[in-house]
Structure formats: C-alpha cells, structure tokens
Length: 353
Image (tube, rainbow, N blue to C red; front, side, top):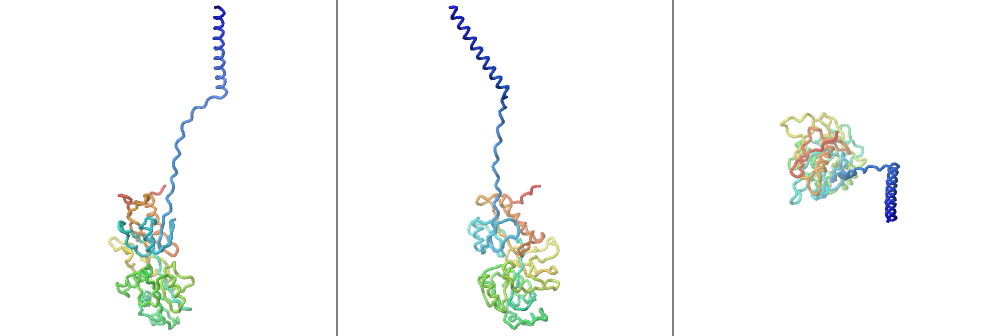
C-alpha cells in the first residue's frame, strides 16, 4: 500500500516537471520570436473607372478641333448612323433628312465657316471677280470670258473669247447653297433660287466631285469647291472684299461689330438660311456655314451623361478653333445648345481646379 502511494506521488511530480518545462519552452520561444499583432483587414481595391471612348463624328466635314474619331460619309449615310445611335455628331454643310418615326428631329448648331473657292481653267489669267459678276457668270447673264463686265474687273488682262463652261453638281451640297445665298442676298438671283442643288445655265451637270474636277481640264471651265476639295494646282479667282481689295478664299465669318440686344441674330436659325453679306474690311465675301447635328435626348443605348457633356465640349472646341481651311465662330455668334439627359438639361462638366 505504501509502495503504491509513493508511485502515485512520483507520477504526479513528473507531470508537474513536464508542465513546467513546456511552459519554459513556450516562454523562451516567446522571448526569441515575439508574436506580431493581427494586421487589420485590407481595404477593398476600388474598381477602375474607365474613360469614355472618343466621340464618333461622321459626315462630309472633318473635325478641326477636339479628339473625336471622324468618318467621311455622305449626308444620307451620316444621318442613318446618327439616328441608329452609332454616331454622336454629324458635321456637314446641309440639314439632315427627317428622322424615322419615333426619333426626335436633331438639334442643328452652326460651328464653323468655310470659304467657297471659285475655280476656273484659263491658262495665264489671274482672274478677279466680285459677287455680282460671279452670280451673272453662274446664272448665264455672262456667257463668254471676254465680256465687258469682266474686263472692267481685270484691266490690262487679256481675257480669251471662250464660252463659260459652268460645271455644277445636281446633288444637294452646301457649296451650292452658300453661293445661292450670296447671289440672293446681292439681289442678283430671285429668292426661289435659294437651294442646294441649282444648275442654272450649266454646261455640265455633275453628280460627283470627281466629275467636276475632271471638267477643269477643259479651257473655259468654271466650278465651285469647298477649301477641302480644291484640286492641287487649280486656278482660284480672287474676289472683291468690302473696302475694294481682291482677296483669296479664307474662312471667316466676315461680320464686324458687337451683337446688340434685340438685333437679329448674326447667323441664320436653320441650315437653309442665307448668311448676311460680309461687312468687315478685307473679308472674303463668299462663304458658308458648317453645322453640327446631334440628337436632343441623350439618354439612349446605355449612354452616360458624361458622353453628352463631351458633345458640348466638342462643339465649343470647334467653334473656338481654326484648322484644315475651316474657321470657328466669334463668341457673339455662338448659339446655346440644349440637350437633355432624361428629365434634366445637360450642362458642361466642371473642370478640375
């Protein structure tokens, strides 16, 4: 009995020693490598905010400011892209055709000016014209190049006794509209001629620019082009500006003076309106407007309000810049642009400080 009791005491003493030794080991381990506190949970990684893709601009007039992607399309195809929601803006010199049922009519905003070049084929002749003489040439009242009215504008110049061979486009185009507006404003043409596909007394009625350019190989030919379409090396007439000087084509509005309260707008309210005649000294007198067309309601096909704000920024960039032979507009000729996103009016984005 005494032996069994002593054995039990020895076993308990051994367990105490083992326990004390284990505590020593743990304590020594703790002194050698202190335990680090548990780190706080990492904050969630924010999702990247992808920038808006560049605006898609289509039409017959390339952009001259901004970072939009441009595709050259005839007016009918450009309008189809806008109405289908694949394009953001149409740039051109003519109004768009009516939209399909269920789509609101686009907002048309003037954003720039282009000069109409009077191109001719008279070797060795540096031609000078004024608006009345040009309108008479286009309307058939002057039918030969050595007419007295042209001699008066070109003293000392030998003008050939060649017929005037006018090449005009039968398709709707903004160059024809701009010239018709100038001739109607000058009182040379009747108001019924204010249209974009007049042919007047043409020798060649053409459907395309390429055919018109080919006509310039014929002596006596006369044609009208935008600054982007003048063939290299072509002869271009000088036109008389306010003040009496003869100037080459240059894109500018050509209107001087501030816009007074209550005065009529400097620019026509629709793309078929005629521009006022130039009054700034030295301004080129034959020019037309470039129009930007956009859909008035911008909340469609998953678009964001930021994309609608991009449109406002692009229109301002175009109106305030000059490039590619095209010019923007003075501030007093800017018109307001009213676009809606849902029930709210789209306002320009606030630039960061």
